[in-house]
Length: 252
Image (cartoon, rainbow, N blue to C red; front, top):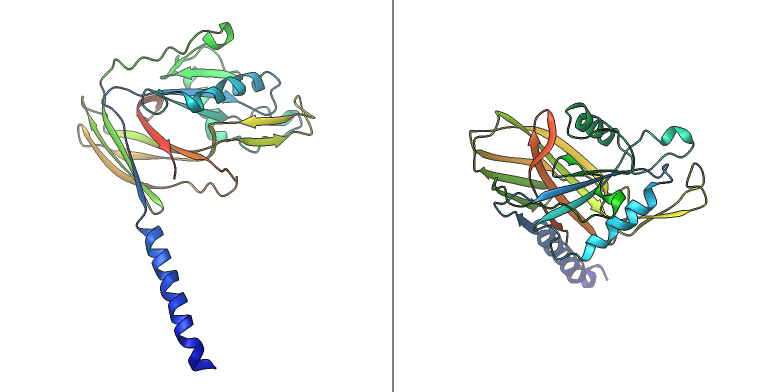
């Protein structure tokens, strides 16, 4: 009986190894145009009763033809409303600090939710039902992001000299997320989220004049289940959150 079972076991083992190898060689590459892709940042919180309409507005861009080519929406949840009784599972202290830095450097006038930053500048047009002020006229250079196994390799060829160090950001976005809130201002509601950051990391990168090449591990987004995910990569100055260039796309 043992001899008869050996070929079956070998076949199964071989098939398993082939499956592993096929996953190991999987890769995706996203390349931006040379024109600046606008990062549309929406600062939100599940503890904020004014935020659900902004998140509903954000969801419309899933089918926008300009998505990832001209602009990339990103839903950043802050943690400064957690104290009122509901801890937002998507909230990150890094996003609170990012919003504070925008205000500290004069890029925005206040810190609030919902808060909007388009291409590194505060925007209040959402409150007046205005169109997004997307501007791709500035030529900054081509940014590519190659995803291979568990890392993303960035290459940027800038049109002008960069500072000695820049900050590289990698975010995984989740879609069709639903949270049933039981406390706080939104208690009793089921809140939907799209373009929401489910994991994120950043790293300081040394630059050689106009050239940048670096690799970062892909953030582990296993905490949240999402049938559809996207990745967004962007560069900024080391101490200024204003984006230099961004690239992203749907993850297979």
